[in-house]
Length: 493
Image (cartoon, rainbow, N blue to C red; front, side, top):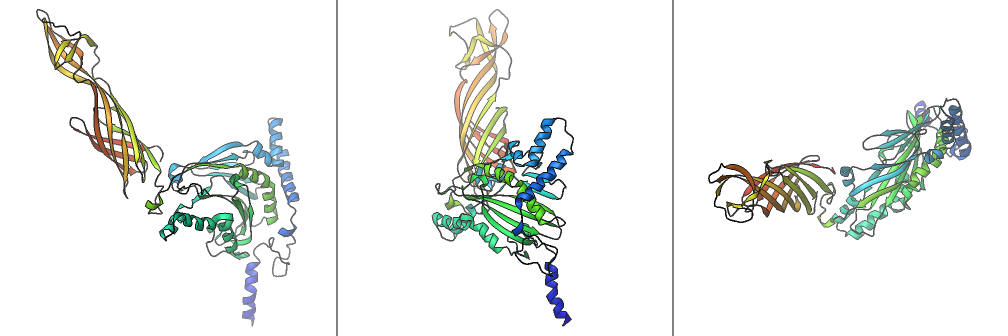
């Protein structure tokens, strides 16, 4: 009999380790009997006022160099909304490589950074985080201003592989997310008043969920934006997490990649010695500021056109995302050169370049002689029987422009290019001029035979060797075949 009683009591003992603040139940002997307040009886205004008073008392005890600085501190801590007024505009720019995984380009998230009096910056290469600690250091607020983007492209593609056309695939997937249906599913699947054993939301796995709520929000000034609130607790900490979602649906451009979800979060947490009433008070104290930051944030981005018929791998990067690569080509004939290749993943790209080589000599050019019809002539064309010339050497100054097309070879980090170039050569010739009855002299003169415009064709293979680095190897043909190699770096990588 004792065994059975023990089995009945164990669940209650396990249950009683968590707060009952969010329980809409009568407190009984099996749950912490000292708990008298619940979420139903909270006075948010009083809690916010208490937070402001604590912060004000802390500021009053601080020393300031001038009254203006002291007044700003008091304003911000008395009302965190002033941290917005004194804040500054910031932009979180997504790297091209990261943006391409979202099937977008030129992504920039714009927001107002709250003043550093209230929030410390924790900024890495890929994240903009801000942190605030309460006056006694017990409650920490984390503000994430580097939102996660989830594209719906892969889901559209998956439905199309099952036989649906693009319109029907979009209808099915969009219904899955429109009107916060995705968030509603999370809310309904989280087990309230239980420890989560299934990874419905991985951040809350093995956490005890007290309360879940879903409301409209103004995040990113978007009509389809919501905030999912999850109140949780584990062995060491407790907290409130507000998950903000903005749903971007662009049905006007049928092949556009502009359908995605933008998600970020604000988290208030503390150790288990702090009550949920205190955490709720801190959250309400910050509420006006957080809502202004979220409501005035914005997202700049450029959708791309997706070729769904040729979209055969859900794990590839954006098919149309370009690599803009600067190449230097090792070529003795053109020591100064640069070529820009705008190569794409699954469509025709372009390239264009400029090349230059100076004369090898530094001498002045004769105004009396020139090379025409393979012999030295007087520049005015008049005959002169008192001299004859011997041609010794040539010097070339070239200016060339080239352009062409690129195309990626499927399933390989390799592109093929084919193009043409136009070149202007200014050719100078060194000659020995002998005068009858006088000494000879070496002069440089313009070579009219070889100077002028000419064209050439070229083809190259371009290989992505590592990350943003490329090599180029190919041939160029004018009068004969010349080999060329180059090294490039992707400035958009």
